[in-house]
Image (tube, rainbow, N blue to C red; front, side, top):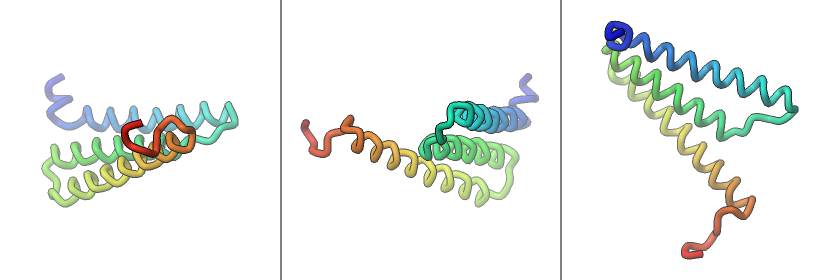
Length: 100
């Protein structure tokens, strides 16, 4: 088990689980005739980029590849937060003035 974790193979498994989660969500949404929300896709992309960065850095690849994955994760996360924030404001669940 320790070899499985220390070799980085566990990260490939986690990345596979994230991909499987995406496929399940797409299938479920298709069955319910609803679109998958953009923020859900952005969260999944962020998670996948973080796992990819961890795998690259654990395998001692060039640090720039890991940094690119981390930057991609940051961009995806910021987009997900922005879209979630906009959806909350549009639905009235979030006040536009501080202190309300």
